[in-house]
Each structure stands twice: as C-alpha cells, then as structure tokens.
Length: 344
Image (spheres, rainbow, N blue to C red):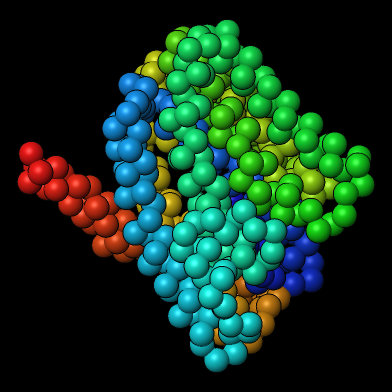
C-alpha cells in the first residue's frame, strides 16, 4: 500500500492513468497506521512478562538492535543519492544528525521529518513508542480486561476525534506535521494495538471475524481516499485495521484458515521492514532516470516501470534483510551477551 502510494506521489503515471492510481492508492499512506497498530499489538503479545528494572534496558536494547542497523545503512544510501549531481537540495548537518538519532519527526520542518530517507519519519515515531512501551504496558495490564477495553475505546475515539477537531478548528495547512508526522499524535494507534492484544490474550476480544474485518478494512480504506487530508492518517481506517489484526490473531489461535500463515506470506513479512525502508529510494532513483516525474501511461511502459521498481525494491529488501538486518541484530545482541559473560 505504501509503495503504491509513493508511486502515485512521485507520479510514475500521468493523465487518466494517474487518476486511476489516485483512486486506488491515494489512501495507501494509511498503511503506516496499520503498522503502528500492529506494532503495539505484536509487542504487547510477545512481551508476556512485563519488563522491569534491567528487563526494561534489555527490551530497549533488543528494539535498537532490531531497527537501527537497517536504518543506518538505508540512511547512508539515501545520503549518497542526495549527494549525486542533479539530486536537488543537499542535506545539512542538522537534519542528518536528527535522522541518525531518530528524532527527526519531533521537528516541524520538512527538511527534518522528510530528510534523508523520507519513510524513516515513522521509525522515529516507533523509537518513541519503544521508549514508552515499558512505561505503558504495566499500568495497562494492571487495569485488567475491562480497563483494556476502556483504553482501546479511548484510543479509538482519539484517533477519530482529534483530526475532526483540527479540521473544524480551521488550523492552517502547515499543521500537516502535527496531524500526521508528530509522534505524540500517532501514539493512540500504538496503544490501541497494545490494548487489543491484551483483550485477545485474555479471551475478551468480541470483535468480528476475518470476513467482516476485511470488509471494514476495504470500506474504511476507500472512504479515506474521499475525505480531507486530516482524516487520511488513520481516522477512516482505524476500525478496519484494528479488527483485521485482532481477527487474524484469533484465527491463528483457533487454527482457522488465514492468508497470512503461508510460507510465502511469512517470508514477505520477514522482509517487509527492509522493503519499507528501501522502496522510496528505488522509486526516487527511477524518477531521476527520467529526469523528473515519469508520468507514463498504461500503454507506453507505465506497468513495466512499476513492475521494475517493485522487483528491484523486493530484491534489495531480501538482500538487506539477509545481509544487514539479521546479522546486525545478532552482532549487537551477541556483543552484549559476551560483555555480560566477561564481567561475570
């Protein structure tokens, strides 16, 4: 979804073809919202024991080892692309430093939150979620089932109500940072995922099954493409995405059929983070080959260029996952274990 959204933004297609792409994938950026909810769900689900003391530090270390090697390599690749002749405005020290420190999304300037590898803005939000997770999961679990349901309801209401308030308040267009990129603005989506995981774990989830959840997801997605920008981030799709994630988890627990348990689906899931981090660099590189927005049609090479960009992104994602993401994580975690052994 995010890949095809960026194909639309970079205008690989033009004219009537671009109109079709806009209709189908103009709301593709809501895939980031899906990821935030899924991230909260998976972290809460996989962290069965509430981290305390040194366990919090270990949790943070594992999160750092999970995301930073790939972020560092793709940021370096983005920097090299930006330094090429004709690449446009060259990066300055401030945005580069903020990007490497994963704090760029806290600065309301485009050159910061969209600097270097533009999609890494969401990684800055995730870094904030990771820091907050140990502080959020303990009180959430102390609230029990009913408390988790209340938290889920409050988060859902915030995701829908805050953009509506911003729209009705007539805030200026410059608030695109505040109503999309600002990490605090996206926090309710992450906490919603956490609360839903606790409900599923406790056997208290009463949401719809997969068929209805898929219908809600599709309906919300296409509704999102028809609304004002303030609602594009998550408001229209949050119900569908949340119920879809919980329904898929329920299907797994019950051994029911699910399209996400197949070998290919699992493998694509493993490389999805690398794909996300590299795809916009491939799309931008393809744009530079055309000297600007390609604006192709369906009959003069547009689908072939799209297929090439997707194939290159997927191939690079597999390579980055195999040779950077996994080895980098192992190296960082191994060094810690060796240091602990030596100290003891």
